[in-house]
Image (tube, rainbow, N blue to C red):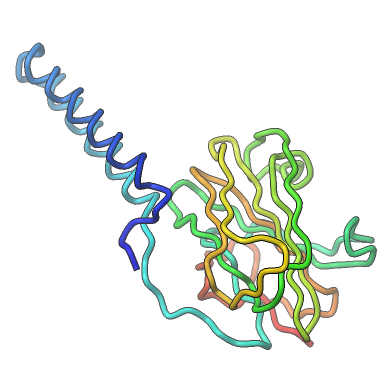
Length: 218
C-alpha cells in the first residue's frame, strides 16, 4: 500500500513546487530575518498538513460478518433513532462521524455485500458538524446488502470538502473494510443501521476506518 493516497498525486507535487517557488522568491528578495523565518515556518507547516491529509496508513483491517466497521476515521458526533427513514421506510439508527482535516480521509466498506443503491445529491457546503449537513450538503447515498440485512451510508461534503470521490458502482460486490471512496479536506459520514443493531461506540469517541467496530447485528 502506498504511503500516500492516489488522490494526492497531483496536489502534493503542485503544493511542493509552489512552496519551493515562494521560498526562492523570499530568499532572493527578502533579507534574512524574522519575516523570512516566519514564511519558512508557514510553508513547512502547510506542506506538512497536505502530506498528513493524504496519508494512507496500513492497518489490520476488521473482517467480521457479525460486525459493522467504521467506514472512516473521525469522531462520533451523532447517535440517534431516525423515525421512518426516507429510503428504508422504517425506523433506523443513524450514527454520524465527523472527519476533521487532520483525519485520514479514505472511506471503507462498513460490511461485506453488494451495492444495491447509489445516488449523488448536489447541495450546499455547510460545516460538517451542522445537523442540516446530513440533508442539505452535497453527498452520495449508498446501500449495501448481505445475508445479515442492509445498511445505508452517506459521504457528505463539508465547508472545505468540495470533492467527493468514489470508485465503485451499483452491483459491485465488496469486502468489509475495502476502500470505496475518499473525501477531500474535512467532511462527515452518516451510517444508517437497522433499529435492532447494537451500537458499540459512544458520542465523542474517536474511531478508525476499517478498524473500530461501530455496531453488531442482533
